[in-house]
Image 1 (cartoon, rainbow, N blue to C red):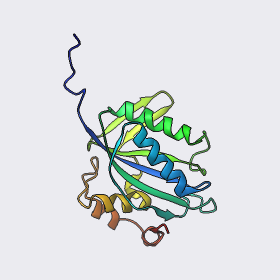
Image 2: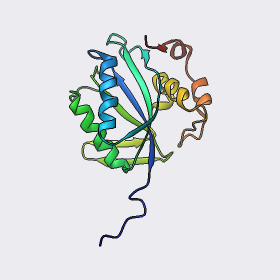
Image 3: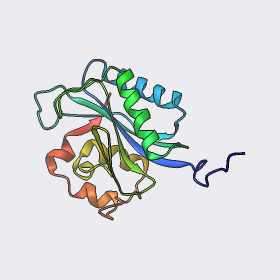
Image 4: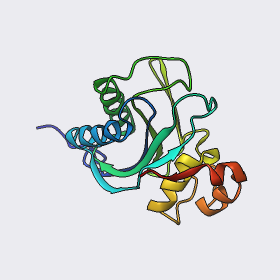
Length: 176
């Protein structure tokens, strides 16, 4: 008989940031959401879709972004691998940093933990290293959890949003 690990059935909570700026962007995000659920990841809450200019190159197509609060009985490595599998299923290919993409899924927060780990060719940094400077993460995250606190900076999301520039504050809208 196998001894059950105490953490084996632990429910983990994560915030996932979804983005797309190629093709039918809303459809790409909706397909992402469907595939996330098919992988056994339960979506507790989801934000609206938000539209922003591409960053750092505003000449690329605009992005549609959203945030999901999910729960799963997977550890961080298993969740990360499932997300990479979903991106690949949707047609994401390796490209230059910040170039247009069909789908991008980032783990923004995992149980409020600070995680730095190398997984093959990938670096897993949670919370996401630049999330506190990104309107397309902060606005939808605020929509889901107005009391969220950045695990590393120990700052409430309202404080993080107040540090955005006026261009960042004006440069995001709910996608129609």
